[in-house]
Every structure is written in C-alpha cells, then in structure tokens.
Length: 86
Length: 153
Image 1 (cartoon, rainbow over the protein chains, first blue to last red):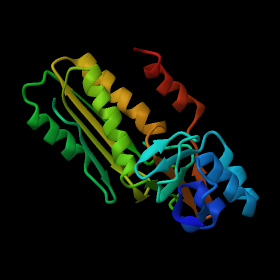
Image 2: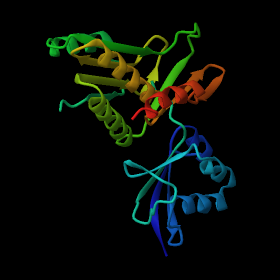
Image 3: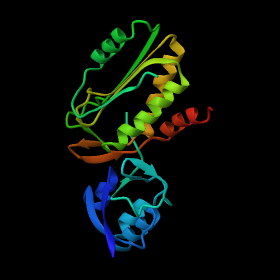
Image 4: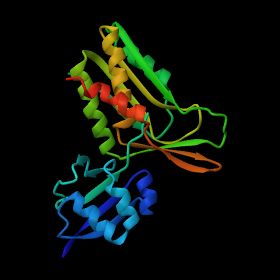
C-alpha cells in the first residue's frame, strides 16, 4: 500500500532531480519529511545527498515544515534549496 | 492595520511609477523611502537573470514578514514588487517603498524587507550566459544582514 505524492523540486534541486516534478507512490512506512528523503535516496543516492542538506527547506502545500513533521496527509511536498531573491 | 501591498510580477514593471503612486496615496506621511534593485549590467549582452518563485508559498512568506514590519514600525503603507522570469541587464528586479510619519521607520522597514527578500523569501536566481548557466546562492553577508533583525526582540 502507499499514497500518491507530488514531489516538487525548485532551483538547483530541479537539476539534481532531472525534472521539476515527479509523482511517486510513497509507502505507508514514510511518515516524516526525513523518512521521505531517506526513501528517495534509496533509488537516487545523488538526489538524496542533495536533499539531506540542512540548508534545504521542505514545504507541504504552502507552509514550510520541519523535517520531523508528519507528512502522511500531504499530497504535495516541495524541496527548496537556499533562497536568493532581490 | 493597513495591509502590505505585495505583487510578484512575471513581466517588467516601472519602479518610478510605483514610487509616484505610493507618494500620492500617502500625502499625510512625512517620509517615504523607496528602494530599487536591478539586474547588474556587466557588459555581457548574452547575460540573462532568471528568477523563480514557489507560487503560493512565496507570497505567503513575504506577507508574513511584511506584517511583521507593520508591527515593528508605525507604517502608513508598505509596497513590495518583485519580478520573476527572465530579465535583461538593467531591468528592475525589486521595488520596496515605505511611508511613515517620520524617516527612521521608513528607512529601517525598507532595509528590513530587503534583507528578508534577499535570503528568506522563496526565490531562486540563475544567471544564463552564452558560456553556460549557474545558480546564484545567497552570500554569507545576506545571512548576516538578516541576523541583525532576528537578534532584536
């Protein structure tokens, strides 16, 4: 069993992921954002390495969440590299 | 409380027109400070700056710190414009304008908003040249600038 989650990659993480978005069937064992990164890293070690960096922020819907937040209800998770505006 | 006026724009905007509109809307304010950030012209005609945002989240995060500015300073108005998309050298990227009864609040709030826009708002910046592209990461100074405000109550 699992759930469909839309993963979004912004900035240089899009280059690391090879696409701005992917839809994944995430297994139920993935409870937190941290778990999700570990799960992604099993298939894509390079991307996992980029996502595990503490400078990468994680958003569920339109809110930035901590890495240990429960994401079981989130249909959309975005990975955000360091911000650079202005 | 007056609300901040925030727009993320995928097309070019006229910062001087924004400044004029702010001034005519705030004739009771004694002080108006405006800031314009523009894409540097380094003499490379192939150079393009590409800015991206995270629609929804970017607006929400900027609203959060703009409301914080209203709590910290007695502002009559706060206007924020930020470009996204591809920009040529010399094009405006950002406009911040604040109106207040006195100058200090106007100066400080614009400085505060700019520090947040530089390294705490979800934007990503890429430089594209004929030789190739590169992502622009925030500088150490940008993070230090932001800390100035976080150290205060």
